[in-house]
Image (cartoon, rainbow, N blue to C red; front, side):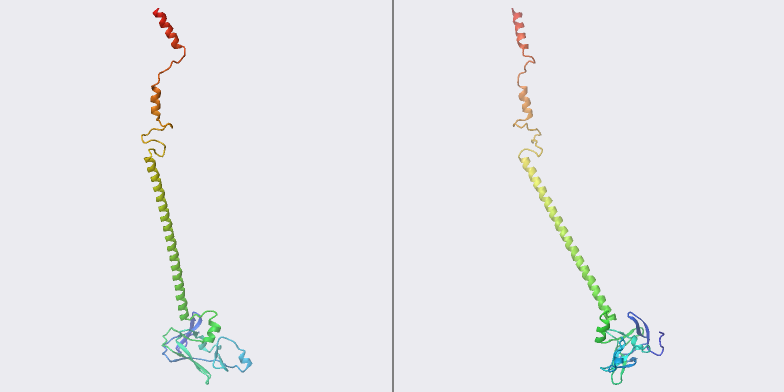
Length: 243
């Protein structure tokens, strides 16, 4: 819909669809637009049966049906922290939207639809006004920060556990090396190395004497002849020679 030059607003695209935006500065307290449409009498079954989201209740009996396209005020969206409000005049059966803040050109005009409308239409789908979007954005940021905090905490815990396990493994290896050194020292003090050799490098024969001593003892014994009859024949020859 093209902007109306004689009005301080225009219909434009909003985060919720269409919305009403200021085209000129609007001062606080100034009348912006009238909310109008056919009057519905709740005492009449025909009127009471009409249902749409543009119904503006004046009192227990009268309701304005603002669904007509000429009602520009129907494009004004709800906001939990609005810059305008609805000025309801039940006796005159009239509703006017007034600014409660100074509104700058380009700023979207909005007002609070009330608790009943909010619960019936907005709460089920989630309010999309700037204040609620900001609140949701803050909650999402807090949720992300909490997830990152928990992740960092878990990583720190895992790192600490790994360091503890590594320290335990090092301590175990240190104890094992210490025991090995003790065993080697004990074997040296007992006169033998782990491979069964004496400190002088000679092997044990198993009887308390070295193999060198055994060879020496064997060398001290007299030699015997290869044949048993050789000695007796030599003695007989000597006797014949003397005779």
